[in-house]
Image 1: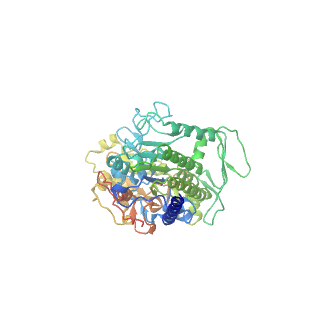
Image 2: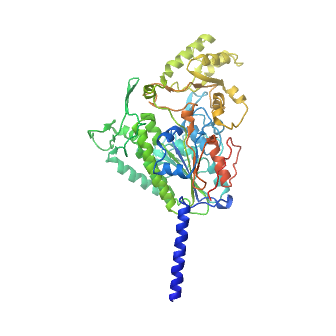
Image 3: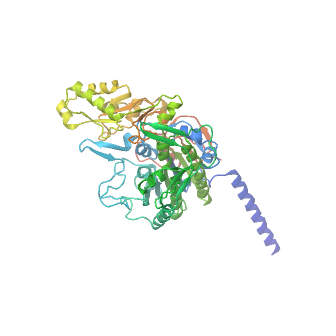
Length: 576
């Protein structure tokens, strides 16, 4: 009896010291075995932070104590990662991240585009009227993957690994839907006043756990105002202040009060109070760190309630964090709002990583962004940077006038669908037919656009399609014309695509946001890229593209892409 007890004690201490050694050597989540097909991780998590540029990450996101810091200390950090396409918007960017293909292939040329046959603007994830979003009135067009072309990493995973599941959660429908791809198990996004929802393209009702989650969230927000106060002192790279964009004031300062929709006006000295009506609460809430907190909470509920990563298969969860985008559009990317948002994101991401690691599952994380962004011109001008705003309504009127005069027309030829952001120009069908089917007049139109002083590059759709397909070793070597090519989609793009010169914001608020994105320049297309959880941590300076993410994951986990890709697999070194 005594000998048996002694052996038991010795076994206990031997196991304890083995566990101590393993936990010291492997500080991350339980590591997946490095063998590909048979030893994939239990859970792959892909996180996209909307409008998080590489510059913003470098300026405010280095050496932090939480999740952002942990990913950078322990992961493979690519310091020079770029989107290849010209129109750096949320839809195109998210269509790229897990497809391995440019928007020219995914079909998502911009967030919205014009159907020249009907004159109707098409939103990149809208569906026909037979699909509705749960919680919205019937008759309103729902959201789906209808306009996306091809497959994604999640599709390949479900097709090739029995029992795998794919879930997606985001503040925006287009982020959740486009990262999830075809064959997703569950896709959810936030709907103001309702909570996280889905559409009948994916399910006829919400799971009970999500219904309860939404109930708790809305009840908590209804009668409790939120006070956004800084987590700590600001550093010397933060520039608060008051500016005037046209006739609209921009106030960049903390703290802020986010008035609960169920409460009367409650002025508190020292807090900046925005509009207090119910209709504006959700916009203000979305433009705060509390929006991402709710998204993380929902993501953790998906992991727990759906038992992700607990089986023998590999599950995929994509998370789109949308608050940075709303904050940055409203307050720019050099003020106290974005500084504090990055620190709060670091804090909440740290909690998230701790929680997913506590379950004992093997987890890998990919961290990136759909696009970057430019600060608002008024603050940049104070710093001696030649940024400015362009009134595109007046600009388009001038262009139309010059084209009418050159071609002897009595009505406008060009059709942008949205003169506020005219990246692509269509020909009005009736006017172009009048000019002639041979279109000898097209070079004249292109020449006029090129002569406009704000234009950096312009090309016809046919010229872009004629460029040879190629993969640049260094995305910084891609010409503007190639970047336009990667955004061009036959049947959706305009007859003419062009790029404005850098450091231009389009229109004064409220028509244009104070701070913007969408250009083909590095401040919009250079984004963070980190692979974490399985590989040897290092900082890499070799230039890479976001189309490389999906083929890299496929290569690492023994998954075969199901169509030709624009990206190539990156070499990652397994940790010992």
